[in-house]
Amino acid sequence: MLQVPLLKEYIHLFLERNFYRNFDARVRAKPDDSLWQVWFGSGKLVWGLLISPALRFGEWANDKSQMRRESYAYWTIEHVLETGLIAPETETPVTFSDVDGFLTFYETVLARVSNSEYEKAISKWYIDFVRSHKYPAELPLLIPELRYAGKETKHLYRLDFCVLNAYTMKMTGFEISPSSTHMSIAGIKSKTQKELNEELSKKWGKESDKRNAYFKDYGITTVTFTDAELMDIDACISEIRIALEEHADGPLTIECAEHELQKAYAAIWL
Image 1 (cartoon, rainbow, N blue to C red):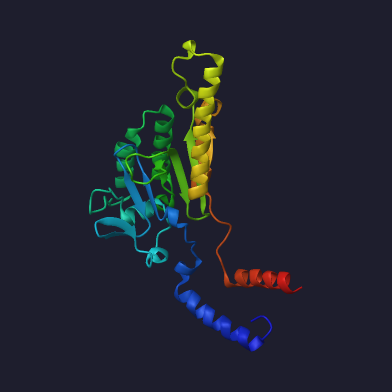
Image 2 (cartoon, rainbow, N blue to C red; image 1 turned 90 degrees about the horizontal axis):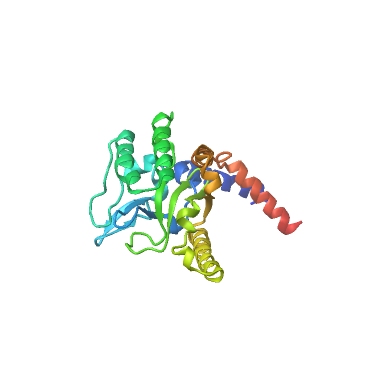
């Protein structure tokens, strides 16, 4: 292509015609299949967000041929409005007529499950943040209690909050981790120093395994807010806001693709 002008011109015309005919589908990134459906919620209150949901033989799955053709950015509030949320035991998605309708659901159902004052403060901020935003539907969903094992009732782990940013393809989890809940040990006065160290080691091992598992299987990097950081909840919220508002540097173009091809060609042959 790069050495024969006539062939290069022909390929350009062919690719340009095909590219613009399917522009949106061509330029958008396709996420790893582990994120084609995400399940969140505590205990039996499980909700699913699928990219292109289809009910097949009584089970919810994705229509793979439709995924890149969907007009909405993945895992955004607009995504929720278009597909609804899936309750595993039902055959009809739970749908919302507008952003306010979904935020009411977020406030009265999703946010009420938590007993953590920090999680409640973050949920309240998110609801107010979306309501006041110029383009609320385009914002990523702040996913509460992202489940590691999917919709199964018995699951290994949950992330307190998660942002899956379709504009940058950055996946960020947020753990509210005060020592009073994550590193507490019962009956501390009756235990020896060795027993305390062993129990603390087990708890820390479990916390580390959780973060490693989310990163390995879902590509999610976890930010942990400790006691000291939670004393300034506004600073924690600022980090979450960055993950919600971050966008990619710019769109993919034919010129950029050709430039990358030129660099690859030079690296091989020069």
